Amino acid sequence: MKPLRVLLITRECLRSDSNEGNTLLNLFEGLPVKVSNIYCKPGLPNNDICKDYFQLTDKIVLRALLKGMPMGCRVKADINAFIRCHLFLSLHHSVPNGGGFG
Image (cartoon, rainbow, N blue to C red; front, side):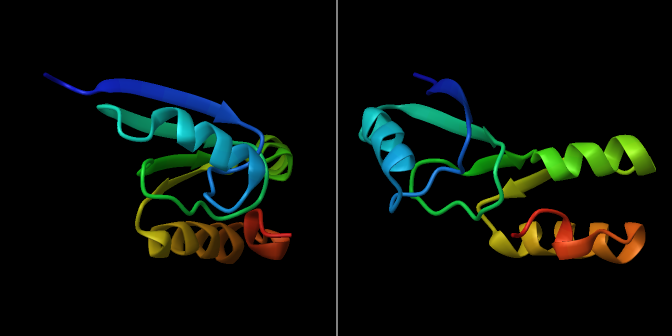
């Protein structure tokens, strides 16, 4: 049986050490689901359930609209991909604070 695919759109990224993230992650623990997360605040995900993320903060959206930059940043379980995305945005589009940190 194929796992149920679930998309969570949240304010914060899914972290097992935060209240919001821990509550949502507990709902899916042990179930045959593939969880993806779109989140709207700066931060780095940290959990064992979700492997696909997309960060879309208000700063990123505003800069994308004003400067024609890519909107958002896809994040896989590999956190290095997240860092490379933000470095690319900051180097090629003069984004202060790495495009979403802080």
